[in-house]
Image 1 (cartoon, one colour):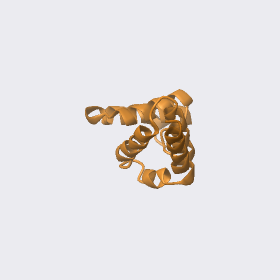
Image 2 (cartoon, one colour):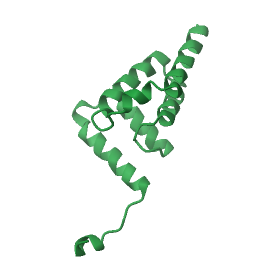
Image 3 (cartoon, rainbow, N blue to C red):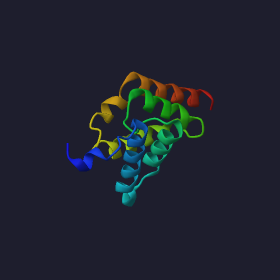
Image 4 (cartoon, one colour):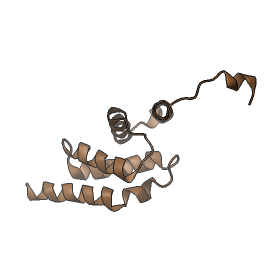
Length: 115
């Protein structure tokens, strides 16, 4: 290890996640879409890493569906996949997993039933 690296302190996982989120926001700034913005905000607010998982995305669906039409949340998920896929190629497969797809389906059915 170089002498220069020996003086650096390691970062916590939370700090690494925070810096990654900031970099992704900056990198996407010219084409920043509300969906990725809401996802990053959700991750920061709930202290989740930005790396998409079935749990994180299904919790995002639950959180967003409280104030947003579930069909719109479905569109947001597609936009999030488009934005995250270059960095996280597995994101589309994660969105198709039962925790995410069934959570969204449940909110869509509840929305239809209530109208």
